[in-house]
Amino acid sequence: MARNITLAIDEAVLEEARIYAAKRNTSVNGLVRDFLEGIAKQEDRTERARRRLRELAERSTLEVGEVTWKRDDLYDR
Image 1 (tube, rainbow, N blue to C red):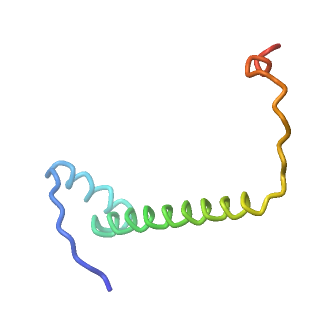
Image 2: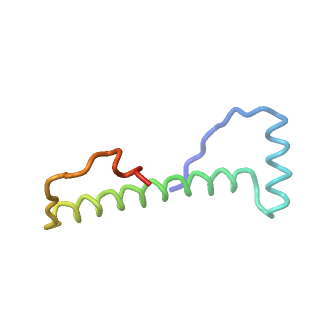
């Protein structure tokens, strides 16, 4: 179910947003909706990726041996 929200925005910004939307054959409402949906989807993808990474790390059988080098050795050329 779609919900209505109210936004307070500077008139000059709103006018530019209307022009931007018109050039893309949409509305300011459509721009805002698409933007917010994009944020929500990105957050969902990020959380799924984090969860998957944790699962892989927990199942990993990799064993790291003793560290025999110093940090400065990495930058020795």
